[in-house]
Image (cartoon, rainbow, N blue to C red; front, top):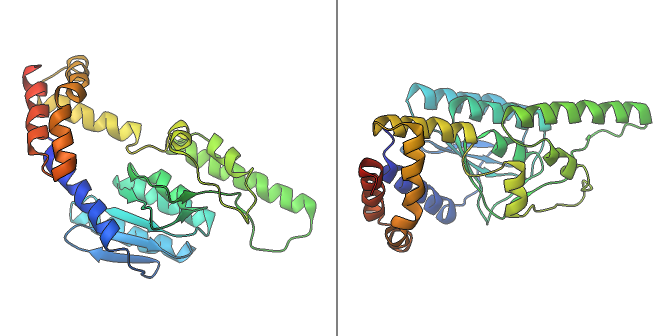
Length: 253
């Protein structure tokens, strides 16, 4: 059974850590073994893939949910996709924060996470080659190959491939910051729908409910527990909200 109270406290503590401890580190750094928090910082490169793979293996071996804080201006697209797949494989949490940056290829890492902390620091533009190729046909072929790679990956992680189409309209020297509604439209939301389904199924089973009844009771929580949620948001004490939530799931009222 998922302990909702612990989950809320965990997420809140991570956000505090993100806001209060925004230091600069090398590309992939293990920040806090008590939380399994890593930071991906600087230019994304192929060498980072192995570092993230090692972090993922560590988290899996220790039965931890890994958390990756993203503070990067982008870099190698293929490396970012490989890292995103690693995060997806272990069900990792990826955090962005307002004082940091998640630009360009960083969005592919963020997309791979099954849980995401979203902020105003997410910026996109058209991926580009670092070479100075002058052959038009070769450039065209390279861009089409990259488009295929990226769109297949986005579909794989339940993100709309239309995200790439928007990226393609922004020149490489500029950064566009998608609105919250745009991110939602593309499927870049706080929890991946497959992950949400998995967690809902686990919780429904733990309360001995059918999914139909579970969602019926879950729909009551926002209104019935609104006061308790406001108190939790103001005081960081979510115990009343958790108790209210569990009462409704257990009794239906």
